Length: 436
Image 1: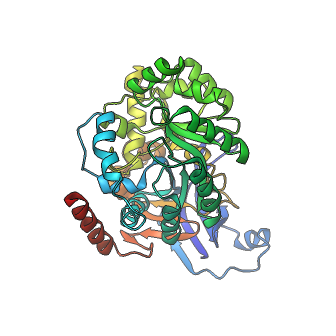
Image 2: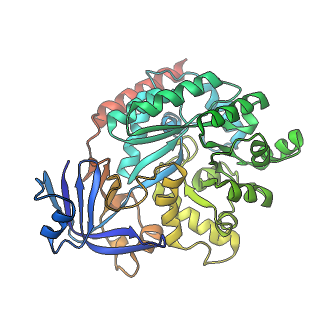
Image 3: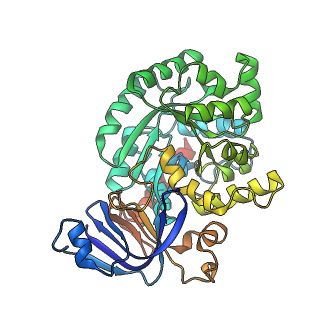
């Protein structure tokens, strides 16, 4: 689709990776951004693009509102919308083993679909253009995401309770070929759910395919303590010694990482993903973001799943990531709003291998959102970036585009599914599950 956005404020990155806001136009031709900048000389711009003219399917007056990169939800379990508000107010181990795992055993390739669509709807209505998912039935989810037009990155969640090295390899080979919108990395659920021989098999796959490796890492004090008791080392140190990070990767949560762990993250070029709302709700702890930040480690933000959050809302996550760092560091400076926004966009893209979707510039994929600045929570415009982080919310999202296709605009979805039908099917499946 060829769309000209004009009369816009546009959030860009300069050569030093710092955000700046310009005023002008952004052109989308097909699935790519063709131009970002001042459009006072359209003839020259067309010539630079090697074009005489563009047949615009739509020209949108942005009325001074802000175009910015879509949020990258760097850790999620999209299907877990089926457990939203089902198993709350429990510690992680009890929540996972006694409530989540038994219900997950009832999921099938057929009944999981509406819950994945609900997750995608929540993503795009909140400005999320891609999510890094650890999902049941990865090929099913890839198909659902592709049909909806959503960009889905996945990582294996194999563990000793389910899955196999053969299944991980099969998913790796097939999901990466489904479409340009779907990709898959090698990984596993967590050290505490996975036997050594299975982890060694994951390391072998990573070397075979030169793939990064990701896992839930040091999410609770209990998990980390018991890993040290079993192996004499932390989950990060154990998996590094197994050779998992030859080609990079990262960890989700990373709350109880010590200085040696942080050294490994830095030297291996790993990404660390914080999920503040989920970890607060499960009383797991608070990730020491500033220690990772000071070490120069790529940081990203995730929502985790709706079973533990319960909202898939990057606006809330940004606010929590910032303010929790301030209070734990006893420093109101903490990590600045600019870098928190960077974590939620470009940092997430780096963690997810989305090098084509990390910023708004010519040649990049057209994954973007339009933010309503004509709302009281965005006024006055003393500092728009700080407005986004500290006072923004999903109600400010006017439009979400993925791969040049508008999936959400003015509270309406364009993902090939009717919300009422999806909700009805999902609630009927839950009713039957709870009767079993």
